[in-house]
Amino acid sequence: KLAGGVGRAAEEEKEEGEGEGSSSRGTGTGTGIGGSAKELGLLESRLTTIESLVGIRPALVDDSKAPSRPLLPTMQRLEHQLTLFTQPRHLDAISRRVKVLVAELERAHEARAKLSSLPPVKSTSTGAGDEGKDGGGGGGGGGKEGTGSGSGTTPFGTADQLARLRSLFLLQTRLEPLLPLTPHLLTRLQSLSALHASSAHFASSLEALVDADRRVEERLREVRGLCEGLRSGMGEDEGRVRGNLEMVQGRMEELGRRMDALGL
Image 1 (cartoon, rainbow, N blue to C red):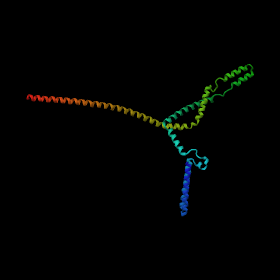
Image 2: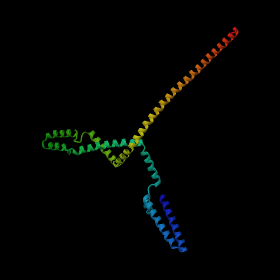
Image 3: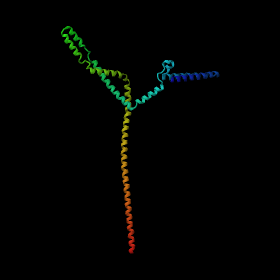
Image 4: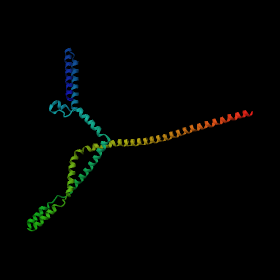
């Protein structure tokens, strides 16, 4: 689609340039013809550069070499995968897998080194058969010894160890295509280690702030309780003081009436 759009745009630009060239020839202005030709050449070079960068130049030349996928969906898919891979949980999972792969590769390398250092296998069964041919009755005994040695352990180890080595070799063949990606992944993880450290520090600081806020809320709650207790106590004291004042005032009035009655 992008190639067709670019091609149509180029054809339209060429047609416009040819129309401008013909009109300029009709009017007899030579400078217009030279300018339109220069603009067409510049446009053609730019379109060629864009097509080569995008990768659709072979598709324009040969229809059988059309691009397998459109460019914009591919870019969107790559961007989506990049955002997924740069998430901390995906990076942690990748780092764990890389560590496991490195450990398995080290084990496979050690096993291969041990196998290469071992001497070649000697066939004991053929030697036992030759002895049997030479010595008649002793051949039966030689054959038994040969079968007994063949059923024992080989220089490469037991059957279980050989099965494990084969599984490690199969795993190594699967891991070899991933080896070029490990340096980039490790570099990416190392570059993001500072970000993870800062995020961990931010999380601890946020937890400390939440704890401090909780303690402040508890203290404020205690202060509110004390203020309410003081307010209720002051209300009770105010009522008692008013009662005492009214009582004293009543007694003073009664004392004044008695003094008036006595004529004092």
